Image (cartoon, rainbow, N blue to C red; front, side):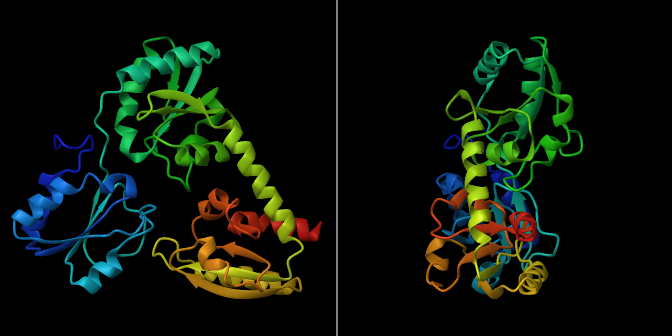
Length: 324
């Protein structure tokens, strides 16, 4: 780990892999929050005679690879930082995934977690974490158990949650009182909260605080049901195929189109690499959009969208409302 960053970007592993493959040109991709920590890696690679491109585009997950642009640039390898492999298909160019664990000591956060959970009478704790913090779960388990808590981490997933996948929490929710998510921000924790019925709290390594996401969950669900009810009145739907490699689902989009048309609605097929209101708003004749890519696009941006925007799970509920 470089002294300049709290994340382990595994520079030595990356350089070794590049040299062993005889690679001369690479493209590096990382979420916005990690881009500021790429300086040392860039300089080390450049000093070794490697041509380096850094993608300035947003990177939302392992579903969102810069392998295609890397191929166009003549890059022989994509270094994808911050996520594990997600796509089932082969990448356009060889891809090295670097999880980038956060290596700051979290002893104080564990102590605060103990105090917080005790104050709420919690006895059984389920632990999950985003990828940068999953290695810290071992210390959380030891720290909480030493204070008398029953602690559960899902073996199959290792406790890792994604913004679009809370399976690590769902699998243990029936045997614990609460879920404690170790990670920064609300993005992953909200995904967990939406996937379980028990309380979810965040142990935030960056702010050093424990907080809940119940209010955000209620607000998100209220917006979701508003969008479904509004979409019921729509006559023209835009069914959006997301072109990102890990979100591309043309077959699902065509199925949704057929279901809508069978109910007397019109369905326009839309394709976009980056899905946001700026992209969709120009289609003024469309009443509602259904996005077949990442389910979080609609959940996290409903306040920004000027029309009801649903994901594929919302569409199932919409069909029930239409038929009810």
